[in-house]
Length: 79
Image (cartoon, rainbow, N blue to C red):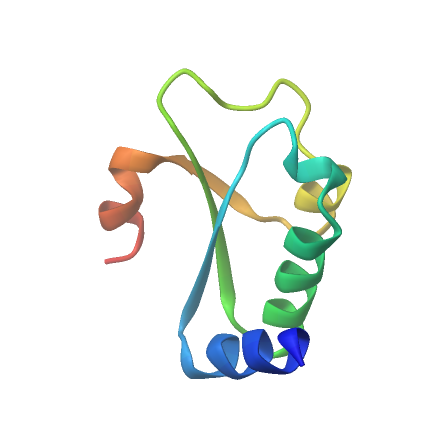
């Protein structure tokens, strides 16, 4: 049920924004949301607070070529 509802929301959006932190690599939910977004041909952007980018982003971020930006630059990225 939860995946179905999240899938519906992703389908209605043009971009999926994910918050990246040290815990993101362990989150199967974030990975699933990214994979679902890519499957639905949605753009994915990862954000993090200034000076808080993870030292080691998840490998699948680079596999999917996900752009990472500082939170306060997100609006510029989405233009």
